[in-house]
Each structure stands twice: as C-alpha cells, then as structure tokens.
Image (tube, rainbow, N blue to C red; front, side):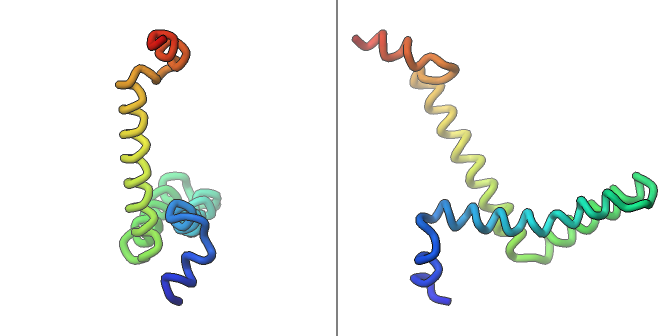
Length: 101
C-alpha cells in the first residue's frame, strides 16, 4: 500500500495514530483473558505480564502504539502547561479575559 492510499482512509495524521493505538490495544486484550483464567491470581498476573511484555517486544504495531502514546502524552502535557502559564488553566478563562478589558 502506498502512503497516498493509506492517508486516503484517514482524515489526519492524528486519526491514523489513534487507529494504530486502538489496534494495538486490541491485542493487549489477551491480558484480560489470562486474568480471567481459573489459575491462581499470582500465576495469572505473572503469565499476563509476560504475554504483554512479549507482545511489546516483538510486535511492531504494539511498539509503534507505545511510541505514539508517549508523543500524545508529551503533547497533552505541553498544552496543559502552556494553558496554565497563560492564566487559562483551572477554570480561570473568564477571569483572564476579564482582566484584559
């Protein structure tokens, strides 16, 4: 598939990234199945963590989803920080605009 064909299916880069993350999280539902097994809780947790770790280390889609999540988290943190610094955070939007009049 060409880049052009790929981007034809998504409205934006962010929409493509969200689709990748959603697909990867679908794979991690394996962990839920393991945690519902009849094995002892500790054994189920250990097995589930090993399954997820294996996926994260071997599956390209899972690794890319992790990278995209980190990028989104940093971007969200930067936006929140700049909003707070400008006086618009924590519900102060009304008071900040009132002070400029």
